[in-house]
Image (cartoon, rainbow, N blue to C red; front, side, top):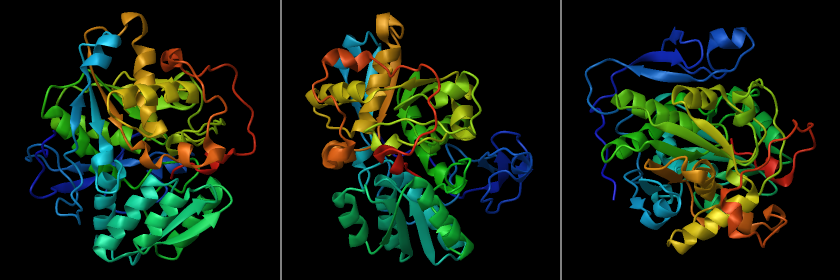
Length: 406
């Protein structure tokens, strides 16, 4: 079981800095990301900076409205470690957060920021987990919430989101959700998810909440690599920032993605492009990449590993055999690790896989349209990433892309 990390008693917040050009800025809301990068045609998120003197990690709002998020279990998986020839393997069970996903760590800080700014309404674009988390934390704080979703959102999420008092707005696809959020922000709402294109990522105040994962991991045996299911890299970036703030050696960060996106950027593609692909891994679907995700991988000498649905299914079954029923998107972390570990390439290393959500409400299982075509994949698929091949042409978004999580 993880213990709560050491956090600063006061935030000691001093400013903000660009993740791309390192330009410093006063504390404010920068909807288009770094102003200097935006003026140059780039899209980069910012990070928060703190005055020296605090021990552990600092959070902008240490006393944010809470539902008990964080301190999630870190479960050793010795049999899987042996199979993959690793020195150690543990799973960080983020579904043990109050609303069932890692998003709660971010929502607490976002809600606190919205309250501090005097916002009366939160808005978010979501494929499920994020919207549910924002709805719950907004209810906790007495804020109105509006969640933009697509028609593909499963009923289990719709029921839970509306139970918290949030309103649902259903639109045609993920880009329409972002357009809806942009309009609401112009009207004074506080955005809890990305809505810009090229994508920037979520408000940096929210991403700070993910630093607590790094602090919890650093409180025990430091891992050599951390594998994270990835879409726009909020979680990946937050973990990176946390390790750097603690001052510990930055582990290799590995992004598990359902088809080549970050991998193509690391190979030379422009991060501002669209990367089309189809997947049943609804929580990490989508065609966009962010600079914050690219930078987290580069800073940690990390890797992006494409994981086909078949491999994610096999990993999901293998985790279930260990007693862990993970969401398909979360199980991609194990599949990515298995691909990296082939032939003993990671022999002796200690790895952590971040299991972001439970399979109990997996959109890939609930919605027939999101199920993979091949339900009888062999266990050999566990170590088989998606093929890269030539860059696909831009196509009409699939059901999975329409769920692109904000």
